Amino acid sequence: MSRSPRCIVTTSLVLLAGLAACERVLLGRDAPQEPTENFEFLWTDLHERYSYFELKAIDWHEVGEAYRPLITDDMDEEALFEVLADLLFELEDGHVNLSSAFNRSRNWDFFQDYPLDYSQGLIDRHYLGRDFWITGPVRSQILDDILYLNYRSFADGITPAQVDALMARAEGKRGMIIDVRSNGGGSLDNATRLAGALTDEDYVYGQVRIKNGPCEDCFSSWTDLEVRARSGPRFDGPVVVLTDRASYSTTTYFAEMMRQNPNVTLIGSPTGGGGGTPAYGELPNGWIYRFSSTQAINNDEEHLELGVPVEEQVHLDAEDERDGIDTILEHGLRLLR
Image 1 (cartoon, rainbow, N blue to C red):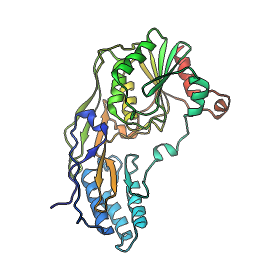
Image 2 (cartoon, rainbow, N blue to C red):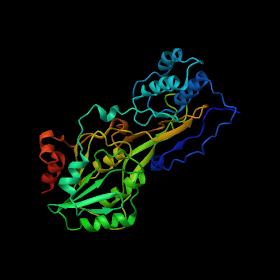
Image 3 (cartoon, rainbow, N blue to C red):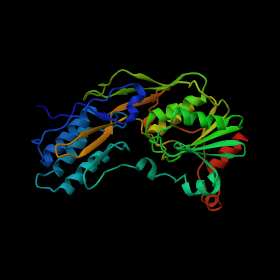
Image 4 (cartoon, rainbow, N blue to C red):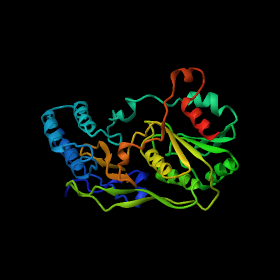
């Protein structure tokens, strides 16, 4: 029986293009445990299914040659984990991880090397206050006749009824601010459901395709990424969306949806990217790994993996923060007043 992983387990992001996830392959108990075989298993699977080698100018064969001498069959689990984690770090991708019983690797350079532009405590104390609404995953407050929505994670589901309630609260308001700073992503369904409440017509905001072989051009055909206008209550006034470098994955998709909406202005910092749909695999020793298996581009054929730009770049000023002022949010309020 072949032990090469041929099926992928995807996060809900794969739903964005109707791509069907395969059933996960469960490896037999007789699977090899040796470090060398685990290394080759991981290197080969990513060679065949990782989607961004060409975009990032990564020579995976060269990387493999550099790391193979570091693997020995007498190394312990922690040493093996460290080498494999370093191997995956070469992909410069926040969607790439290795998980064992004792550790989980990560690459957070997409936001850790940038200014910290969001403070939950600042928002809680000086803007949401005590009488804010909690509508599913969204906290909202009225600020100067402007509806402020704070959505912390698209992993937290928002229902059509909750969107109805938010749109009803927005009715007659001067504008709306949607704060998705430091929102690390989640389900694309939640993002498109909210985006669909801010438009009166369907529109395409990009395309997606999946890697399906080891060659540079081994991809499926492109499939449209679309926002569909919802049939329920909608808000057609001006909207400001706040993003920062820690806005990642589905939040990058949401930012691009908003960028294609003529009623929306993006301010803050460009998003951190994360345009590839995560897929999962299992090493012979049972460790789980994750990697980007798709590519997504906007209508100008620019990769979402590289982030979504803002129309006005604004950073959180340290002195403002000490005075209880969110520089970025205040700029958004001024735009709508």
